[in-house]
Image 1: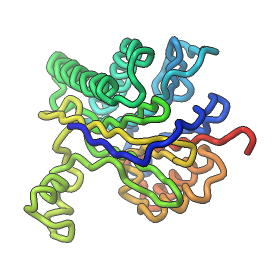
Image 2: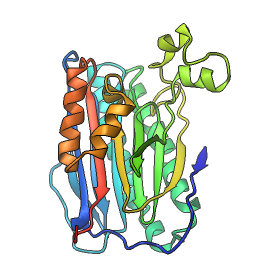
Image 3: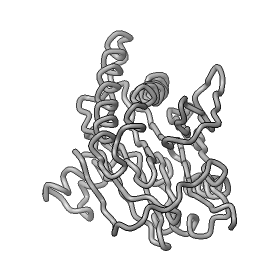
Length: 292
């Protein structure tokens, strides 16, 4: 499924330099769970992948001084038991990163105003990772090993949001917070079908039951193409944040942020103060002009 969010067109603004990107990520086990099944990754794609920050153990970090082709940020929230969930989320990020990196030809050849090539890369990548994780779970006899996957692929001046599961992507622009992704849960599917309302008792029962997941019985990746500019603040998170922190509080933290690092730490503390009943992962990113 593809969703296109358009904004008025005009001249393409200058692409931020690497030094003008303020991006940070954090993950925390929370107060209740024994293990952290969340993982995140933040990377830029040059002629090779440059890892900036991740919770996945890597043998080495690579860097590049070449012009940035794209920017990648991802959150995965594993399900299916502590070992299986952690492995699923780690595997999904590793595999989708490898696929996107192998598809780098599209960053050289695609029309920046044509979404088709980038949508195809994300959809194809998600389904290949889903197939591989399903096979892996069968081979290792870990039934139910699956993960959410929410990815931001920034190809200036556009961004492409990949959504599988209920980890979320928000954007703040002109002080207004907007949840771009839609939770792929049984509750949201029933609401969309008109079967229940958000105020019905049944909503609470089904709001954390996934209807789509990488490695699950069904994976239905949704790609949303959005305009990007210097005025956006981007947020990706697992549901460990949104279980305890309201959209109003998230908007307040992003409106008043002094840095992405500070915003991530403040939101993490809000989730912990609210109960911290699940693993918590947050990525915040924005562009800050050097002259500012």
